[in-house]
Amino acid sequence: MGEGHAAVREGTRQLTYVLAVNEAMRWGLATYPEALLFGEDVAIPGGPYGASRRLHSEFGARVFDTPISETAMLGAGVGAAMRGMRPIVEIMFSDFFLVALDQMVNQAANVRYTSRGRYSCPLTVRSQQAATPGACRQHTHSFEAFFAHVPGLYVGLPSTARDAYEMLRTAIATDDPVVLLESRALYQEKQEFVLDDPVEAIGGARSLHSGDDLTLITWGRMTRDAVTAAERLHDEGVEVDVIDLRWLAPLDFDAVAKSVESTGRVVIAHEANVTGGFGAELAARIAGELFWHLDAPIARVGAGDVPLPAAPVLQASLLPSADAIVDAARRVVDPA
Image (cartoon, rainbow, N blue to C red; front, side):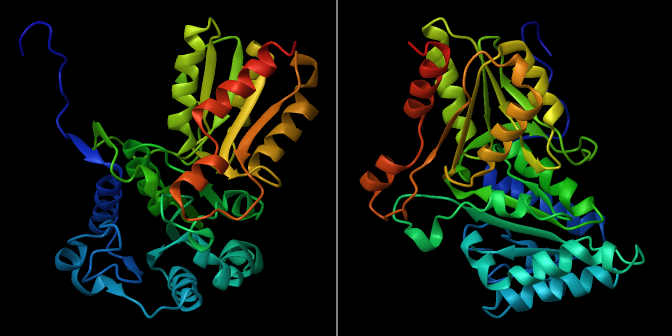
Protein backbone atom coordinates (compact mmCIF):
# COMPACT_ATOMS: atom_id res chain seq x y z
CA MET A 1 0.00 0.00 0.00
CA GLY A 2 1.33 3.41 -0.93
CA GLU A 3 2.80 5.91 1.48
CA GLY A 4 0.24 7.98 3.40
CA HIS A 5 -2.48 5.31 3.26
CA ALA A 6 -3.44 3.52 6.47
CA ALA A 7 -3.53 -0.24 6.22
CA VAL A 8 -7.04 -1.69 6.10
CA ARG A 9 -7.31 -4.97 7.96
CA GLU A 10 -8.85 -7.94 6.24
CA GLY A 11 -12.45 -8.29 7.37
CA THR A 12 -13.02 -4.53 7.65
CA ARG A 13 -16.43 -3.41 6.38
CA GLN A 14 -18.58 -0.32 6.51
CA LEU A 15 -22.03 -1.16 7.82
CA THR A 16 -25.05 0.65 9.09
CA TYR A 17 -26.03 -0.04 12.68
CA VAL A 18 -28.95 -2.27 11.66
CA LEU A 19 -26.84 -4.27 9.19
CA ALA A 20 -24.23 -4.71 11.93
CA VAL A 21 -26.98 -6.33 14.00
CA ASN A 22 -27.76 -8.55 11.02
CA GLU A 23 -24.11 -9.60 10.67
CA ALA A 24 -23.85 -10.39 14.38
CA MET A 25 -26.89 -12.66 14.25
CA ARG A 26 -25.52 -14.34 11.12
CA TRP A 27 -22.29 -14.95 13.05
CA GLY A 28 -24.21 -16.39 16.00
CA LEU A 29 -26.26 -18.76 13.87
CA ALA A 30 -23.17 -19.90 11.97
CA THR A 31 -21.02 -20.30 15.09
CA TYR A 32 -23.53 -22.08 17.33
CA PRO A 33 -25.55 -24.94 15.80
CA GLU A 34 -27.86 -24.68 18.81
CA ALA A 35 -28.67 -21.01 18.11
CA LEU A 36 -32.22 -20.05 17.13
CA LEU A 37 -33.71 -16.74 16.06
CA PHE A 38 -37.38 -16.00 16.47
CA GLY A 39 -39.89 -13.22 17.00
CA GLU A 40 -42.61 -11.35 15.14
CA ASP A 41 -41.84 -10.99 11.41
CA VAL A 42 -38.16 -11.92 11.76
CA ALA A 43 -38.16 -14.76 9.20
CA ILE A 44 -39.92 -14.22 5.86
CA PRO A 45 -40.26 -10.40 6.21
CA GLY A 46 -36.69 -10.05 7.55
CA GLY A 47 -37.67 -7.99 10.58
CA PRO A 48 -39.55 -4.70 10.78
CA TYR A 49 -36.32 -2.75 10.20
CA GLY A 50 -34.42 -5.36 8.19
CA ALA A 51 -32.30 -6.60 11.10
CA SER A 52 -32.87 -10.26 10.21
CA ARG A 53 -32.95 -9.89 6.44
CA ARG A 54 -31.97 -13.06 4.51
CA LEU A 55 -31.26 -15.07 7.66
CA HIS A 56 -34.26 -17.36 7.16
CA SER A 57 -33.11 -18.23 3.63
CA GLU A 58 -29.62 -19.02 4.96
CA PHE A 59 -30.50 -20.94 8.13
CA GLY A 60 -33.95 -22.30 7.37
CA ALA A 61 -36.15 -23.48 10.23
CA ARG A 62 -33.75 -22.12 12.86
CA VAL A 63 -35.11 -18.66 12.01
CA PHE A 64 -38.88 -18.49 12.36
CA ASP A 65 -41.82 -16.17 12.95
CA THR A 66 -43.95 -16.37 16.07
CA PRO A 67 -47.52 -15.42 16.91
CA ILE A 68 -48.04 -11.92 18.31
CA SER A 69 -47.39 -12.98 21.90
CA GLU A 70 -44.36 -11.65 23.72
CA THR A 71 -45.23 -13.86 26.69
CA ALA A 72 -45.07 -16.96 24.48
CA MET A 73 -41.87 -16.03 22.67
CA LEU A 74 -39.96 -15.12 25.84
CA GLY A 75 -41.31 -18.16 27.66
CA ALA A 76 -40.20 -20.34 24.75
CA GLY A 77 -36.82 -18.61 24.82
CA VAL A 78 -36.31 -19.39 28.51
CA GLY A 79 -37.36 -23.00 28.08
CA ALA A 80 -35.22 -23.54 24.99
CA ALA A 81 -32.20 -21.97 26.69
CA MET A 82 -32.59 -24.23 29.73
CA ARG A 83 -32.68 -27.29 27.44
CA GLY A 84 -29.43 -26.54 25.62
CA MET A 85 -30.43 -24.16 22.86
CA ARG A 86 -29.07 -20.63 22.44
CA PRO A 87 -32.10 -18.54 21.41
CA ILE A 88 -32.05 -14.98 20.12
CA VAL A 89 -35.50 -13.44 20.63
CA GLU A 90 -36.56 -10.14 19.10
CA ILE A 91 -39.12 -7.98 20.89
CA MET A 92 -40.23 -5.60 18.15
CA PHE A 93 -40.54 -2.56 20.46
CA SER A 94 -39.23 -2.49 24.01
CA ASP A 95 -42.63 -1.19 25.12
CA PHE A 96 -43.97 -4.69 24.43
CA PHE A 97 -41.77 -6.19 27.15
CA LEU A 98 -44.43 -5.11 29.62
CA VAL A 99 -46.78 -7.95 28.73
CA ALA A 100 -44.05 -10.53 29.39
CA LEU A 101 -42.04 -9.22 32.33
CA ASP A 102 -42.64 -12.34 34.38
CA GLN A 103 -40.67 -14.35 31.84
CA MET A 104 -37.68 -12.01 32.18
CA VAL A 105 -37.78 -10.98 35.85
CA ASN A 106 -39.07 -14.10 37.61
CA GLN A 107 -37.91 -16.77 35.19
CA ALA A 108 -34.87 -15.96 32.98
CA ALA A 109 -33.05 -13.90 35.61
CA ASN A 110 -33.44 -16.63 38.26
CA VAL A 111 -32.60 -19.81 36.36
CA ARG A 112 -29.15 -20.31 37.91
CA TYR A 113 -30.37 -19.38 41.38
CA THR A 114 -33.50 -21.52 41.47
CA SER A 115 -31.73 -24.55 39.95
CA ARG A 116 -28.71 -24.27 42.29
CA GLY A 117 -26.52 -23.84 39.23
CA ARG A 118 -27.69 -26.97 37.44
CA TYR A 119 -29.15 -24.92 34.58
CA SER A 120 -28.06 -21.83 32.72
CA CYS A 121 -30.09 -19.55 30.47
CA PRO A 122 -28.07 -18.47 27.41
CA LEU A 123 -30.89 -16.26 26.16
CA THR A 124 -30.32 -13.09 24.12
CA VAL A 125 -33.24 -10.69 23.88
CA ARG A 126 -32.95 -7.87 21.34
CA SER A 127 -35.25 -4.90 21.18
CA GLN A 128 -35.18 -1.26 20.12
CA GLN A 129 -36.45 1.64 22.13
CA ALA A 130 -36.90 5.40 22.59
CA ALA A 131 -38.22 8.10 20.32
CA THR A 132 -38.26 8.73 16.60
CA PRO A 133 -40.49 11.29 14.83
CA GLY A 134 -44.05 10.02 14.59
CA ALA A 135 -43.69 7.43 17.39
CA CYS A 136 -46.04 8.10 20.29
CA ARG A 137 -45.95 7.08 23.94
CA GLN A 138 -46.63 3.38 23.40
CA HIS A 139 -43.51 3.15 21.20
CA THR A 140 -41.06 5.54 22.90
CA HIS A 141 -40.28 4.18 26.36
CA SER A 142 -36.70 3.75 27.57
CA PHE A 143 -36.57 0.83 29.99
CA GLU A 144 -32.86 0.35 30.65
CA ALA A 145 -33.12 1.42 34.30
CA PHE A 146 -35.77 -1.20 34.98
CA PHE A 147 -33.82 -4.10 33.50
CA ALA A 148 -30.57 -2.96 35.16
CA HIS A 149 -32.47 -3.12 38.47
CA VAL A 150 -33.05 -6.87 38.09
CA PRO A 151 -30.29 -9.14 39.44
CA GLY A 152 -29.41 -11.89 36.99
CA LEU A 153 -29.84 -9.88 33.78
CA TYR A 154 -27.06 -8.35 31.72
CA VAL A 155 -28.11 -5.10 30.07
CA GLY A 156 -26.40 -3.32 27.17
CA LEU A 157 -27.16 -0.34 24.93
CA PRO A 158 -25.03 -0.18 21.75
CA SER A 159 -24.40 3.36 20.52
CA THR A 160 -22.53 2.63 17.28
CA ALA A 161 -22.59 0.07 14.48
CA ARG A 162 -19.41 -1.46 15.85
CA ASP A 163 -20.91 -1.84 19.30
CA ALA A 164 -24.15 -3.20 17.84
CA TYR A 165 -22.05 -5.94 16.25
CA GLU A 166 -19.61 -6.63 19.07
CA MET A 167 -22.08 -6.44 21.95
CA LEU A 168 -24.56 -8.73 20.20
CA ARG A 169 -21.84 -11.30 19.55
CA THR A 170 -20.91 -11.07 23.23
CA ALA A 171 -24.54 -11.54 24.23
CA ILE A 172 -25.00 -14.60 22.03
CA ALA A 173 -21.83 -16.18 23.44
CA THR A 174 -22.86 -15.53 27.05
CA ASP A 175 -24.39 -18.35 29.11
CA ASP A 176 -26.79 -16.05 31.01
CA PRO A 177 -29.70 -13.86 29.87
CA VAL A 178 -28.78 -10.62 28.12
CA VAL A 179 -31.09 -7.74 27.19
CA LEU A 180 -29.77 -5.54 24.39
CA LEU A 181 -31.68 -2.30 23.83
CA GLU A 182 -30.87 -0.84 20.43
CA SER A 183 -31.72 2.63 19.15
CA ARG A 184 -33.73 2.70 15.94
CA ALA A 185 -32.78 6.36 15.65
CA LEU A 186 -29.24 5.11 14.96
CA TYR A 187 -30.13 2.23 12.63
CA GLN A 188 -28.95 3.99 9.45
CA GLU A 189 -25.72 5.44 10.85
CA LYS A 190 -22.62 3.90 9.26
CA GLN A 191 -19.27 2.90 10.69
CA GLU A 192 -16.26 1.03 9.40
CA PHE A 193 -14.94 -1.71 11.67
CA VAL A 194 -13.38 -5.16 11.71
CA LEU A 195 -15.74 -8.14 11.81
CA ASP A 196 -13.27 -10.87 12.73
CA ASP A 197 -11.90 -9.58 16.04
CA PRO A 198 -12.17 -11.92 19.05
CA VAL A 199 -15.47 -11.84 20.91
CA GLU A 200 -15.33 -9.26 23.69
CA ALA A 201 -15.87 -10.01 27.36
CA ILE A 202 -19.15 -8.67 28.67
CA GLY A 203 -19.00 -5.19 30.22
CA GLY A 204 -16.67 -2.25 29.78
CA ALA A 205 -17.18 1.45 29.16
CA ARG A 206 -15.51 3.39 26.35
CA SER A 207 -14.07 6.90 26.22
CA LEU A 208 -15.37 8.92 23.27
CA HIS A 209 -13.75 12.28 24.00
CA SER A 210 -10.95 13.25 26.40
CA GLY A 211 -10.86 16.14 28.85
CA ASP A 212 -10.10 17.02 32.45
CA ASP A 213 -12.68 19.73 33.22
CA LEU A 214 -15.89 17.71 33.23
CA THR A 215 -17.03 14.07 33.11
CA LEU A 216 -20.00 13.49 30.81
CA ILE A 217 -21.55 10.02 31.26
CA THR A 218 -24.01 8.67 28.73
CA TRP A 219 -25.13 5.63 26.69
CA GLY A 220 -27.24 4.66 23.69
CA ARG A 221 -28.44 7.37 21.32
CA MET A 222 -27.33 10.17 23.63
CA THR A 223 -23.66 9.45 22.89
CA ARG A 224 -24.06 11.30 19.60
CA ASP A 225 -25.38 14.41 21.37
CA ALA A 226 -22.75 14.07 24.10
CA VAL A 227 -19.87 14.16 21.62
CA THR A 228 -21.44 17.13 19.84
CA ALA A 229 -21.78 18.92 23.17
CA ALA A 230 -18.17 18.11 24.08
CA GLU A 231 -16.93 19.60 20.81
CA ARG A 232 -18.93 22.77 21.38
CA LEU A 233 -17.66 23.05 24.94
CA HIS A 234 -14.09 22.60 23.67
CA ASP A 235 -14.59 25.76 21.63
CA GLU A 236 -15.52 27.51 24.88
CA GLY A 237 -12.37 26.26 26.62
CA VAL A 238 -14.04 23.42 28.56
CA GLU A 239 -12.47 20.00 28.04
CA VAL A 240 -14.93 17.16 28.50
CA ASP A 241 -14.30 13.49 29.17
CA VAL A 242 -17.20 11.64 27.48
CA ILE A 243 -17.82 8.12 28.77
CA ASP A 244 -20.12 5.76 26.89
CA LEU A 245 -21.07 3.17 29.52
CA ARG A 246 -22.25 0.65 26.85
CA TRP A 247 -23.23 -1.86 29.55
CA LEU A 248 -25.35 -0.83 32.55
CA ALA A 249 -25.14 -4.34 33.99
CA PRO A 250 -22.37 -5.08 34.63
CA LEU A 251 -21.55 -1.43 35.27
CA ASP A 252 -17.98 -0.31 34.67
CA PHE A 253 -17.89 2.01 37.67
CA ASP A 254 -14.09 1.94 37.71
CA ALA A 255 -14.07 3.92 34.45
CA VAL A 256 -16.51 6.41 35.96
CA ALA A 257 -14.48 6.78 39.13
CA LYS A 258 -11.21 7.29 37.29
CA SER A 259 -12.71 10.11 35.25
CA VAL A 260 -14.52 11.80 38.15
CA GLU A 261 -11.40 11.72 40.30
CA SER A 262 -9.66 13.64 37.50
CA THR A 263 -12.37 16.19 36.66
CA GLY A 264 -14.37 16.72 39.86
CA ARG A 265 -17.50 17.65 37.87
CA VAL A 266 -20.20 15.39 36.43
CA VAL A 267 -23.09 15.59 33.97
CA ILE A 268 -25.15 12.47 33.27
CA ALA A 269 -27.26 12.40 30.10
CA HIS A 270 -29.79 9.78 29.00
CA GLU A 271 -32.82 9.67 26.74
CA ALA A 272 -35.13 8.22 29.41
CA ASN A 273 -37.12 10.64 31.53
CA VAL A 274 -35.16 11.99 34.47
CA THR A 275 -37.19 10.67 37.40
CA GLY A 276 -36.05 7.16 38.28
CA GLY A 277 -33.69 6.98 35.31
CA PHE A 278 -30.38 5.11 35.54
CA GLY A 279 -28.72 8.49 35.92
CA ALA A 280 -30.14 8.62 39.44
CA GLU A 281 -28.30 5.40 40.33
CA LEU A 282 -25.07 6.79 38.91
CA ALA A 283 -25.49 10.09 40.74
CA ALA A 284 -26.13 8.26 44.02
CA ARG A 285 -23.05 6.07 43.65
CA ILE A 286 -20.83 8.96 42.64
CA ALA A 287 -22.07 11.05 45.55
CA GLY A 288 -21.71 8.16 47.97
CA GLU A 289 -18.32 6.83 46.86
CA LEU A 290 -16.60 9.85 45.28
CA PHE A 291 -18.03 12.74 47.28
CA TRP A 292 -14.66 14.19 48.30
CA HIS A 293 -13.57 14.36 44.65
CA LEU A 294 -16.54 16.50 43.60
CA ASP A 295 -16.16 20.24 43.09
CA ALA A 296 -19.79 20.88 42.11
CA PRO A 297 -23.24 19.24 42.32
CA ILE A 298 -23.97 16.46 39.82
CA ALA A 299 -26.29 17.45 36.95
CA ARG A 300 -28.69 15.10 35.15
CA VAL A 301 -30.11 15.59 31.67
CA GLY A 302 -33.03 13.54 30.40
CA ALA A 303 -36.48 13.63 28.86
CA GLY A 304 -39.37 15.44 30.47
CA ASP A 305 -41.53 13.51 32.92
CA VAL A 306 -44.53 13.42 30.59
CA PRO A 307 -45.76 11.02 27.90
CA LEU A 308 -44.01 11.69 24.59
CA PRO A 309 -46.25 12.95 21.76
CA ALA A 310 -45.91 11.78 18.17
CA ALA A 311 -45.43 15.25 16.64
CA PRO A 312 -41.71 15.79 15.92
CA VAL A 313 -41.72 19.43 17.07
CA LEU A 314 -43.32 18.49 20.38
CA GLN A 315 -40.92 15.57 20.83
CA ALA A 316 -37.98 17.91 20.29
CA SER A 317 -39.21 20.16 23.09
CA LEU A 318 -39.21 17.28 25.57
CA LEU A 319 -36.23 15.13 24.55
CA PRO A 320 -32.69 15.83 25.76
CA SER A 321 -30.29 17.34 23.25
CA ALA A 322 -26.75 18.60 22.77
CA ASP A 323 -28.04 22.06 23.72
CA ALA A 324 -29.39 20.74 27.01
CA ILE A 325 -26.10 19.00 27.76
CA VAL A 326 -24.10 22.16 27.02
CA ASP A 327 -26.37 24.22 29.30
CA ALA A 328 -25.99 21.67 32.12
CA ALA A 329 -22.22 21.59 31.68
CA ARG A 330 -21.99 25.35 31.86
CA ARG A 331 -23.93 25.36 35.14
CA VAL A 332 -21.65 22.71 36.62
CA VAL A 333 -18.40 24.30 35.47
CA ASP A 334 -19.40 27.86 36.39
CA PRO A 335 -22.28 27.84 38.91
CA ALA A 336 -22.16 31.64 39.16
